[in-house]
Image 1 (cartoon, rainbow, N blue to C red):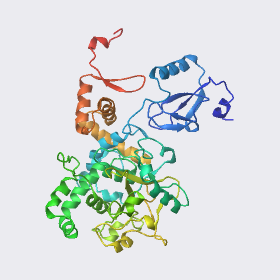
Image 2 (cartoon, helix red, strand yellow):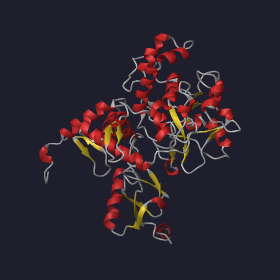
Image 3 (cartoon, helix red, strand yellow):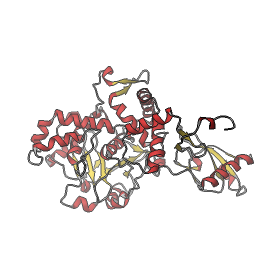
Image 4 (cartoon, rainbow, N blue to C red):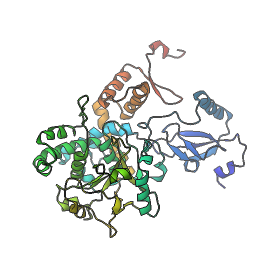
Length: 460
């Protein structure tokens, strides 16, 4: 009989302890034996089933029990302090942490022998990362992470907005839920965040995607102009290219931002189709709220993986009727790959409809598989992140996880949003140098406090 089973027979006051199963967290958790079947980790903010906790045992030291019960009582919570979606950590990484490392990944790669970061140009791989290398990659979310706020299933209202569309997908997949709309932060980069998450599960390549997009438009401008001469005025292309820049900020009151022409560009950057879905009513309307964006400027043979098969499309969607926020739709790990039924496959955008069969492998019933099963392994991703953290530390003399905490606890908590990562990094460095940054030993939150040096002495 397991400890958890036997605990049901124990006194209701029995307290158990276990270790968070996230390898980068490993926090010790305390919880009542008769409580909820799932536990929210007080360190990383993830919710875990009791049975997935490591080294579960009964706590027999009354002082330990009292300390943890008092802590929860004083905090007025039964679980973790509420963290913003940008700070929820999976495998020790928050969204904001990944965003901070993204500019580093644009110009650095990882040496396979040493595991160390190296400039791409020193590895003869060009100045910036070639995003077409991710052309056959796809993220499949772990079933345990589907309900993780800020990482798993989107909670911005998209589940209601896309309900009918997702139901149609479900029906076409033997009534299985197999295509999940997942979270993306709304920080002005949601399109490239959505595409990056659909590719590797993290926001790590948002910066490289923007740089690739800008480069692709510049290098192929004559071809783009010729293709869209009836729809896009020649004078607009300067704005379209400027909008790709990672540091682009639209002029006040001007509704500029990444849109359909940029999704078409990204499909050509990645050498794979990108399918944009909407609510059923939106997809049936005359507006181009949904579309299939094909890599029509790339030769078909360049849109195949190492196995010789066509790169499978990735899928994104609008999250609401405002159509101002993109989210990715991804498959579930260890499950059947999702198929998009023929009735939901939107028309090709900007190029002839018959090219769909050239760039997408259609099943006999006209459906197509989304994403594929070539995922970047977590182990590799963590090695890559560790290598890029070293470069970030060298460049900025501060760890990105600390910058992420400063953004969460100092800026977001005080209502400051939209501040650029570079500014947060500099402010965090300054706070550390001036000894103004302090972490609460109970809840882990950061505060900026001006503490006189004499207070920080024994007996102070």
